[in-house]
Image 1: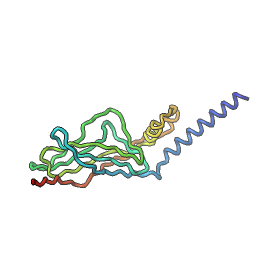
Image 2 (image 1 turned 135 degrees about the horizontal axis):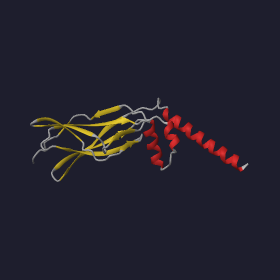
Image 3 (image 1 turned 45 degrees about the horizontal axis):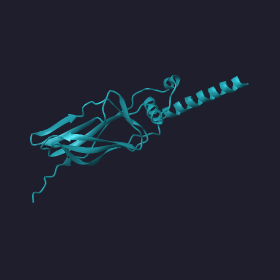
Image 4 (image 1 turned 180 degrees about the vertical axis):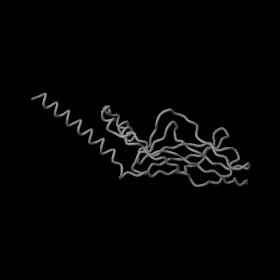
Length: 172
């Protein structure tokens, strides 16, 4: 009797885990909505930095590879426009769950007149979506459950801020 109860409980647990995995795969109702929010500027050791927040207001987790937030900056100086990218800082995937944000700072070249910031990310695959949610809760997912979930890559996205102008300070 006791063995049957334990076996039945194990089958029920496995079935619930498989159903949960299948429900996570159906992300037709989930949407990606992310935007860049300008926070301000700051100076550090004579270098001007722009502070932004990458806000995930959608219902789907977004992910990026090998960087804190992979940003790109377009800056106009007296020599013309230049583009430069974020340096790689990590060797792992990172994600941004729905209804969360990530702050980051971008260095501006000296003498910048106008600038624009872009951020690139990818929709999380069902497997990474599960990893993000389970990792946040600190739970373990059995290997057979990972095999039930698709690891197909999501769509790539790039969003841009509006173009900002540095205003010359009036001298008293």
